[in-house]
Length: 337
Image (spheres, rainbow, N blue to C red):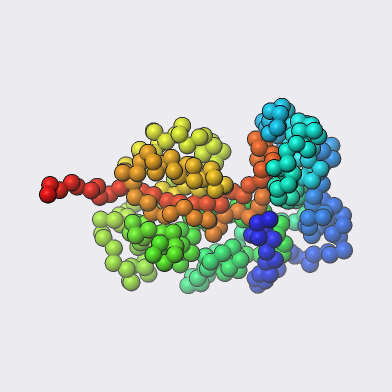
């Protein structure tokens, strides 16, 4: 099990998590419990689908989208561990020893518990965003724990609060952590992932964004944003373009991205999928780009395990790996000897 989902976060910011203290005697009341635990949040979807229209629709989406990994047929059999439809029959399920003997059923059970929690009737203090940061108060980007604390969020009492919060904060905080002056990503020669070309681009961005950064940094003026121009961040929609195979949007899109010479960061929820996309880009555009950030685990990836309706035998955590590149600014010139 990924330790990021099970660390016991004991952050006690100066704002309480709830208006009233948790009722710890209420933990055995299933989805109506105010304090979420694995025990009171997990309920198999073959049971819950008869009580919840949301779960019924989610099960239908899985059964309409997925195929059995053993027979290729429709998934009708519900895994007794995760409570999800994963195989065409019990016989097919028992034949899938790679799945049964792995930790995937337990991860999917956790994903189901997280999803059940999201439709429960409890308060969600983790969705109450922190107030405006006081001027001069620094934010730590070492990890989620230190970020929540220094950003003065509500106290994160359980792994469920952390999971729900990090799912919707992962993308904006990932962007902030890369651009921040106290970024958790270091140079490659210091066992980090940022290359020297990456440092050049990020220094120019920080110089433009943070006035105080200019006092201690020397940057080429040609790399800076003009005073009358805004810093714009373009995000490929996770519900549209980003779901397409990378080869299908690479030719129009990729050349245009490289021509801008702007920093480009890509992320993924599985190491295999991310590295396949990264390798395809590097193989095809190697001479036209500079690597800014070597592939690495994202410090601010989501800790929430989620269900993939197209492959219900695999759970995933979004935005877990990240890398960056930019169109090459200085092309090598051949010199006659």
